[in-house]
Length: 635
Image 1 (cartoon, rainbow, N blue to C red):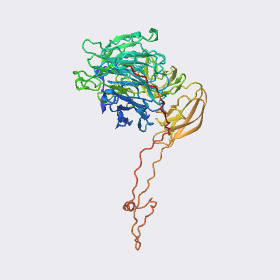
Image 2 (spheres, one colour; image 1 turned 90 degrees about the vertical axis):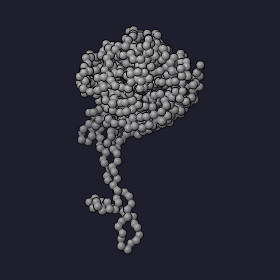
Image 3 (cartoon, rainbow, N blue to C red; image 1 turned 180 degrees about the vertical axis):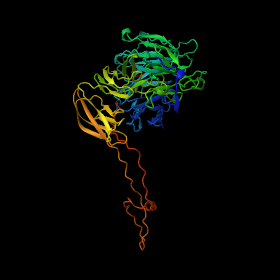
Image 4 (cartoon, rainbow, N blue to C red; image 1 turned 135 degrees about the vertical axis):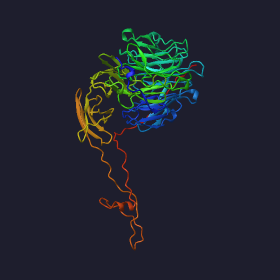
């Protein structure tokens, strides 16, 4: 798409928050992505401000935090891996208590009989054995520092109750970053590992991994040449709008070393082999580190932000705009990002994208700051769609609740087939928001979504309106019906962002016009509840769902009345002649009384409480930790 000339841009990215955050995630399910940096959380208040706290104390010394719903309860949890060189190395896990706090559940990771990854930089979530629960991949660099390569590890989940070390990489390389992608669309989640010190990168092709067997290094067989170089944090994305996932290999490169490059996925017709597209306009700086992809200007082409490692000269992280046809241009200066911290001053090598203010243009975490995208001020008339996927029982099995590994494709005339995937950590310890973002250029009409779920099933959602955030849940197996409707207040005005949920189903948020569509439901009778901030919740019982039919509901929410002013406290009545007994007076009804008298006898009027918020109660099922035979690691 022809882009607006940078010289005409009205505004650049603006720093709005000092933060070391490197991961986005909506931990309280309010629709506003929050920010994470190991032990620290910045809660997004939805009004452009954040509240800072440190609830994840034991993650303070991990290399990075990665976010996903490991126990399938509908709330993302926080995990990190502490390097062995820092003492007491190993996994660290915090369970999200339904958005109301965190619990240290590191003990769910059963103690292995191997030494922990010694020098460690990246880890990520993925359902590698296809059981519907997320496992963990840990990359390892060397042991000890400057020593031989270390082993990568996989901890497999026992249905979220515990994690056991079940796999060790059969070949040791110097692992840095790790990304997941089902590059061959066979329903098994594959991994791409960026290896350092001129060791070849891994493409772990998943051919039915069972926790111990089924991962094969297929980089050579798919022509995925990386040099080999000093790879640090590669990025996965559809950079040419052909519906296939390509890889940008981000290489640190001393003079004479192999540089960074784009590798194009040629798709099923070429057995998912890759072809080298070179730098394609990316500047090979010596300390190039990790890459994060997003369509920042909503023109329909996936752009790239490349960070730098610290300790070198004046090189800086750069933002590159995708001009199409494998041609990228450096727009850091015109976008207000031309003066980031130089390498010699040790900037953060991490970056990630998410839309913190809900305007449809992705914002950037980089250089220890949150940068607000100028959005429509620079690119008016450009449209977008944000897609939030929710797993559950699918036609071919259970899909993890975070839908990690799912892919969405949208065909747009004049742009091609746009593909995005749900991923946890990518590159070297960075995480974009789990909600997928599509820039659509000037396309204003509805679009059709093709969703490829991790269980291998394909779901089509037709006629989706743009310029909004939509939630789609995997279709359950067998017969199903739908429930849709509208939420209004007593004045008849729509209530946006109301939470609507049926019994035992994931909640959805109402749209700006108050409409909602629940995930497909098996035939039966349900109770459906709508709740919104400032309103009393309303439940409709006995909602009958029939196979292949749509049930319509209308909710009319009443506002929560303000509490009536009351009086409290004990006071002494005025003395009565001849009566020396101190008596406790009853508080009279003071309506119409002399306020000066009320004040003189010490009656305190309580302040009105905070805004009320009603939400359905949730249960906290218990867990048990079964015994496990850990795999012994051979040196």
